Length: 259
Image 1 (cartoon, rainbow, N blue to C red):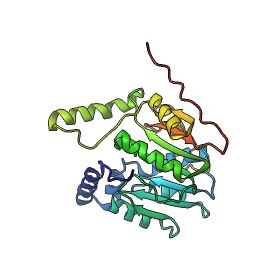
Image 2 (cartoon, rainbow, N blue to C red):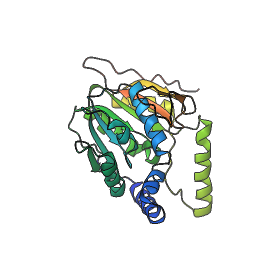
Image 3 (cartoon, rainbow, N blue to C red):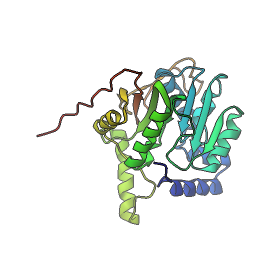
Image 4 (cartoon, rainbow, N blue to C red):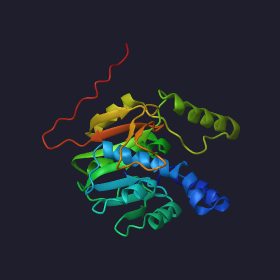
């Protein structure tokens, strides 16, 4: 299952370009999509809404420059591992967060640095958006193995049904027309396919939420002066899967086929 991800080389080149042209902090915020603090707050709030407890084991795949870890550093009993394929991002996240007990790992393959059945939450924010379907599926397989029974996978994804995602696809088409290739990979997923994946992987679907709806509930514990208490759209859609407890059935996908 484990292999070098196709998106690694282009992402490393992009980060190197940013570091050569911007101050480090600005470059490594742009590298993960900008709005470093805001998106970190949104991600933290989503975890709080979908099961985060202050003493859990969290694996943050595609941790980037640490915007989620920066928010999670407030929990002294939390056990955190962040992975990313780009060493410069991992190094910056480690330095910025300043939690010696938080692990930051350079990982270039679709595997998780966790013992089987050891994690409570595995999260993929803006990760499956840049992987081939086969790579994403393999990552979700690895997540199921790493999770305890009852543990959850939380990931964001792009879908054509969300109008704010459409310009991303248009930009990819424009790049393909001008350059003859797709550039930085952006991949769209359909929620009916994700339900089939969930059934095949042995997950139950907890939630699938449209990214242009106010799906982020920022409570008082997550809010800052910059992002006050309220509800906000994430932009990308959200899927929450749960590993069944012993003896619990996996729900069928129940996707009707057109005649």
